[in-house]
Amino acid sequence: MEWQGWFALSLMMAALAALILTRTGPHIVMMAVLALLSISGVLTPGEALAGFANSGLITVACMFVVAAGIHSSGGVDLLVHKVLGRPQGVRGAMGRIFAPVVLLSGFLNNTPVVATMIPAIHAWSRKINIPASKLMIPLSYSAILGGTLTLIGTSTNLVVNGQYQELTGEAGFSLFSITAVALPVVVVGVLFIWVLFPRLLPDRSDKRAFGNLREFTLEVAVASDGPLVGQTVEQAGLRSLDRVYLVEIDRRGNIVTAVSSEEKLQGGDRLVFAGDTEAISDLLRINGIVPSPENGHSDTLNQDRAERCLVEAVVSPHCDAVGHAIRDARFRDRYGAVVLAVARSGERIQGNLGNIRLEAGDTLLLEARPAFVSRQRYNKDFLLINDLDKTQPRHERAWLAWGILAAVVLAAGTGLTSMLNAALVGAGLMVMTGCCNVAQAEKSLDLTVILTIAASFALGAALQKTGVATWIANGIVELSGGTPWLLLILTYLAVSVLTEIITNNAAAVLMLPIVLEITERAQLSNEPFVFAIMIAASASFATPLGYQTNLMVYGPGGYRFTDFLKVGVPMNLLVAVVTLATLLLGWPLMQ
Image (tube, rainbow, N blue to C red; front, side, top):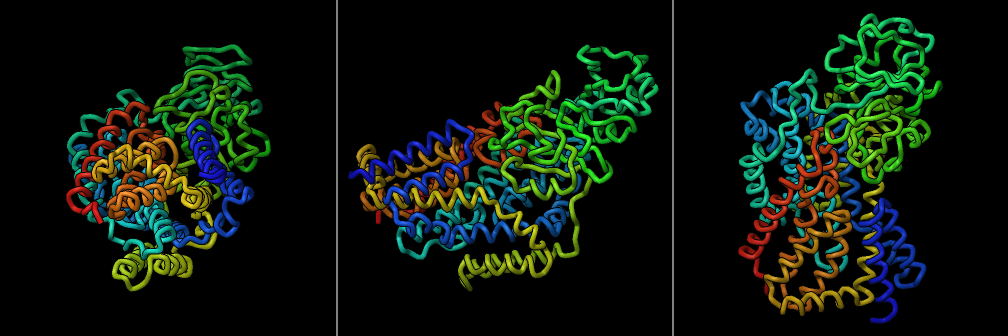
């Protein structure tokens, strides 16, 4: 290889290191790589920016808008309320979840699907008296499995198809090309979840006074000029609250524990409670209770409190506040919100709320202006936003939104038009018919995902242009001795490992040019290898950080990291075995 090849290889290794070892956003890393490839002359400006004009990427953006139309019109709620009902037992509840989630995820991006389903299933679990910890991981896993069913089920499938067309000049795959591989995976995966997960998943139902799985640490203050000053805890109504408990009082640095009912409240007292979100909502309506000043509260934000709402947010790994104490995170300046409570792995965290250092997966209860929800719903800082003061929308256009989605699928599936054109028309119709407005369509476009995908194309093109892909492919072919089945297994394992440690889209885009070189060098059919990339890049079950829907259910389900390892590692292995067996038995590897 010449210097361009070594430069491209070094950039790839540096990008992988940055994605694995730092919290730098993948879009930042990949855009930096794109810039260096263009500046160095390894790629021409046209080659470096070609990813932004790729049909797969544009299709992904359009499907975000289509998903926004289904979400905003209340289409998901329409399906949920007609399907869930009142099942008998955990397996019955899981069975009610599988059908709508797998179906929705097959044709919509699974992130908005799971975001919509979480509050619905959480409320439903309390209604049917089944712990949410028994249902949240099955929700995420079934969404992941469903996303593999079609070419538009995940952004990964669309992007791999787009890059495949660009690198090979071939027509690419149809909407249901991957279904024959994915269907056995979905069936076996769902059966595995249904049979074993009721025993393997933890029961985090609260046997004490609290009715909600997530127990928050909440810190509020007694208003100095409020009506509670001078009243006892009993007189203030703080002893008889349902599902929330006064843990201690911080009075100018002196901690009062085992608080007596006769303890008199003083202005400025900081009250530390433990409880669930619904009980906390009731507590904050008490006249004389205000957010604690050490949690980012300010007089400006405290004004017009009636116009503000409570929202629940799960912290993503890329949130700027991760690693910072709540007091130092400047929530008001960054997000226009006040942190009222925090839960980690479904439990309250001991100590002063302002000193808690935020971690990815923490569930925050925030008090913010209504605009916060619309601004942050698709922001990289929070993977889940649940507006506790509002029910999900139920609009008369829900059926229309479903009709538009069905038309998109029908047009693309029958070959009437390309997937790109079908998605463009579908996105336009969602806006024109009012299923979502222009602002909602704009917010649905996940800019970090789009930038990551587009910039990753540049690195993939550089690996192929400079001969790095050929060099790596030769090494893998020699390692396997040219054995086709071993090459397929190595391909799957490489993508699967990369997906667990970097993003699924980046893993797929980086591996595809290498795999195409492998198949060309070994004179193998590339189709089963491309399908292996698609499945392996999506099938990430082992950690809550491996796939964004896993992290979304991490807090609401009250899970610990080990809960995902316990059920996710067997799921990874099972999906790998079924996928590889299906490909080896159903597809000829030789050309």
